[in-house]
Image 1 (cartoon, rainbow, N blue to C red):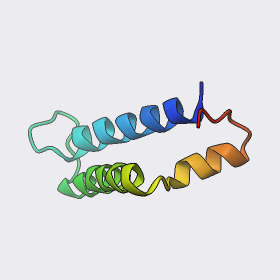
Image 2: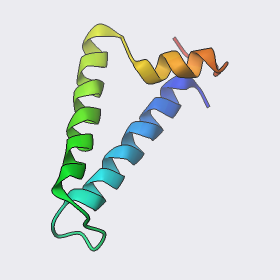
Image 3: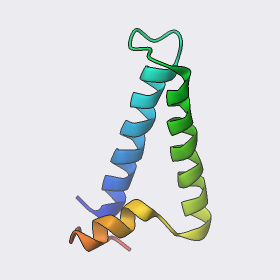
Image 4: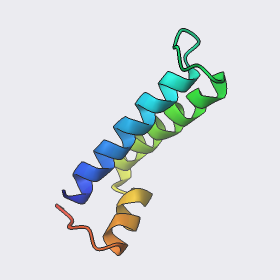
Length: 69
């Protein structure tokens, strides 16, 4: 997997998990504060599309994951 694919997988998983834990109608509901994680991931995706700066991609690159730049 390339770093871009891993970033998308990580972001999608974080959003789905935080929605499952933060949405009041969910059977896995814990607290509405989990929705803050959803907002954070969404904001990070938005800003990285404009600035090309993604902290997770930097970490993955240092770990030796192939970049598809």
